[in-house]
Image (cartoon, rainbow, N blue to C red; front, top):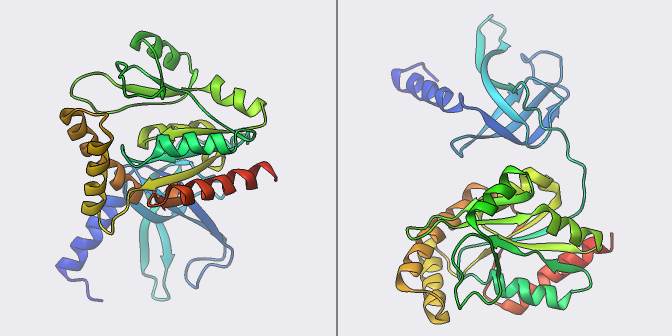
Length: 304
């Protein structure tokens, strides 16, 4: 390929895009590199960049783990037979941010999805059917109570919630966008760990922030993560299904439905952008089938 202005511009644009810090989401070591790349083994990883995009690049250290924070540098990659030097972006561990492998303490079932997809219903049925093996974790929230909440939440004063955050007593917390009130949600470490002590699997309802926090706290390995999707072959049809469910369940005002639908669009985009955070994406078009699938996963884990 000739070095035309357009190809040079695309190459420079691609390099600038890759010159971001990021997180290792997968890696492998090439023991016998191709001709021209030297004889030493090379570790290559898939990096999730801070803008949400992904890049493949060489890692400067073979001592790397999933979740490792890395920073980009230009580096000589190969020299061909004519002596032409090729440089590209490589990634090296950020000083002071080498993430140590977390001790595996147990599994957590995480159900993630937009409002109206059926998370609460599924979690209640699931923990009833397998109550000897799984238990629902209480959700803390700073928002005002509602008559339609069906005992979903444990309400807490915002100041007390902030104290729990500062003391490191929350395994996960996230602020859900709202135009009417400050809505923080979270899970206490002590509630999750108490369920583990009973030799049960904790079941949590999450959204994008809560799920990512749980992964940071306990590691991706600990999270059996399931994304719940509404029926529909397109994003538009999925949102239409959610809107119908929110209106027919009679729990929300028009203003609340508008906010939930805006958040639902972000949730559906999150499934596409963060596929590595999910073990499976499940379309909730048959409640019994979804519960049966999740029950099977729980039983498989408690028997190992």
